[in-house]
Length: 300
Image 1: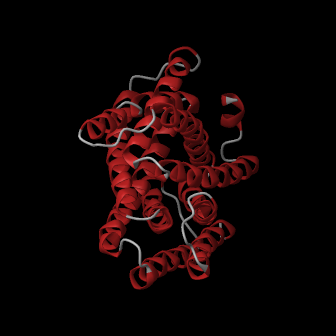
Image 2: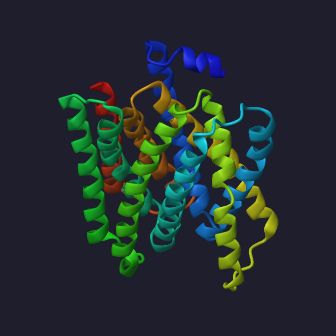
Image 3: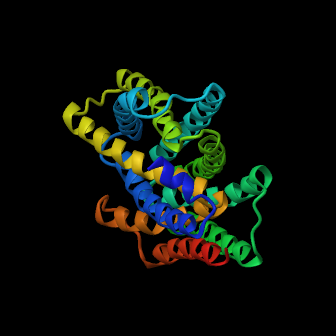
């Protein structure tokens, strides 16, 4: 698999595979967000998911993929710090606001900064049509934020802080997308980066979850939480793995933007699974975000 992926880098086949991987990542990331925002406290859910994916990835990292080159360990350390900040902000945002309010702003803010980062660090360039797509996407984001500020009735007192946390989380989405794209390109075998990333990244949030559990009266049933952790671990593998491989095969900015079609999947999941009220106006604004991502891809 590694040899084949490396052989299609920079080819038309690689671009097609990257497109499919980014769309897969979009759906799975929306599912991952719903798992974290589900019936358990978001901090506990994230702790269970991270603990599971770290433990499951450990034997793969030790025995099935090539050992990381020496220069990769500082890269893993940087990825750990960036993802730790991202996850803390994301869990705080989910604590403050509804999934269908927070998720579109988190995911929609990231692509603009990711494209800027791709220009600065990877020398990528984008057409006028692609920048138009970004403008459409950002318009949908801010339109959604304004709509929520005007019309949302549930947890209105928490809405400004939820939106602020969502924007801050989006900045870190762009940061980790750009940084991790650098990381997966820095090693000979992309699966070495993916396996060791999950091992390095998987131990912090379980500790945070245990600390919160000790200071809280909530005592969730362990088996449902563990089941959510195992399911979330495999969703994380395919979601994160798909987008990282897409950034290795094609432009980082395009992959990051196309992933934000996840806002459409998020609206559907929030309505069908989490029983959150979405409404036609918010659906239209989420679709505008997704349309901007599509225009960026078409303009490439």
